[in-house]
Length: 576
Image (cartoon, rainbow, N blue to C red; front, side, top):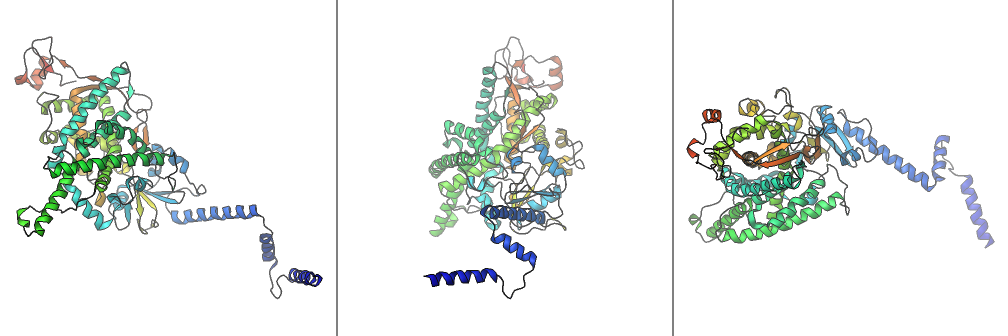
């Protein structure tokens, strides 16, 4: 035993004394090796952190290259805290800093393209980029959703949806939209009455009405009023989850978690609607919503295939394109993308429309005049597609509003491979690449006084032609918005119908013109308004002479649409 101990002791002593026998180690290296071998746990931890920080900084600097961006990155998180409370002024400063700028948040390297030409190049480069919306979007919509398809698969799927937004199809959806507006305009009046005539912030109400209109347009009456209200209320949670950068996983009780629960609820409701629509359309029901139109195309495709198998394809008209029969969940997913794409954008536009028309009575008067005329003096008369399209000034107001306050100010993409965006800079693979639309829509070389709201640009001016490449409200390229015509006509219907049925007043605050970013953009004070029902009044001699309207429709002792009057001859008020 003693021999063993002696041998062991002797062996250790020899190793210690001849540490690097026959190797000539410089003293500096020997010092480093000695320090490492004697390092404690915390020394290793701090060293590892320092190496990670160094790697994070070096990776950022290499990716950044010559473009505008912070010289150094806040370790790991970058400007994550700023992204939790996004400010429009901060975004605008970033866009103004240069054609290309960047930030890095967690593992995401983000490049921002600010000019019109840069934005158009991104929109039109499907070989290099694909839409990503925001990090959490695939978790809400489903990773297999059609909006995340790429290349030919995406093109083929879109072909099957194009027929849902034709002029003929859009006219079928008008009754459902008007029905929803009639209901909610009464609600607006009740809100003001319940508040004792005091102003109420209406941004959330506009979100609800636009969600209800969308639901009636997309799934008709297959969904109950209670479910529509539930979706309208809970959709706020989905929007709140759409932060530009989220944590990599969905944690319980976070915005993403609540958003996911709300999205699952919407998908479940729309799946039920799809099952009901299939039964009704197979029985020969009429198309009343987008879901009906799409399912009818599927049924017609199935019938043609069956006829072809029997050798009788000539007896059935061949649909174009041919569609397979999607299951209820797939239909629900697709319809949800329409709601996803429209809800926040139309809510933003509606809020700004009511605010700016109240601030500009000259604009509202012309909208009202045009709309009462096309309805032949009856504010409750339903409108046709021909009549809606004839509202040239109202549509110019909508067009200018979308330029002046574009709801979608940024469109996130992810690079599929290194993207040589300019001669001097290549966006690394896997980066988030975000073109902005705002700067193109406010280019002073294209639009005179671009920060001023002026519908004349599109009514009598040359903005349509001069700004044809700048009007990126609905994007461009293979992923341009399918529903751009629907969205503009829907907004024209809304503000036109409101103008002849309601009077409203905007109660300005110091924050009314400040812009809040909540997925899209809204007034910082949420648009405080009061509403009143529009009354009849006696027309003046000047109005009768200048406008010469409703003369043949006047009814002695009452207004044209049936309200009793105190005078012998009266007319609707068509001039403010």
